Length: 125
Image (tube, rainbow, N blue to C red):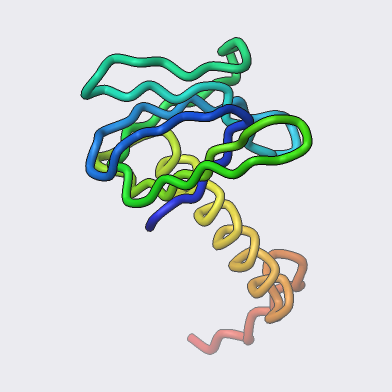
């Protein structure tokens, strides 16, 4: 699954270069890119500090667009994640949590744990 990331600085990274993307994830699950490292040239584009809540993943650049704005320049990168990484694991965990929640709701709707058991039928010996 390709990911589009935006950083608020000019970062001309050529098509096909491998990059390491460092993202900060806050409590609400919002992701903010704090740095991109071009692994081919070892140039680091960083505009924030990595913290304990940061996740890093590696990908290959598919497209790079540099856009002028009033505040300066911003770079939009289309990156294809390669290999297992924190980004894919986070998405998978959120999907698994949503699936578990949906199964719990469905079980409760169809008479889950709150249903009283039926009385036992009398036995004849």
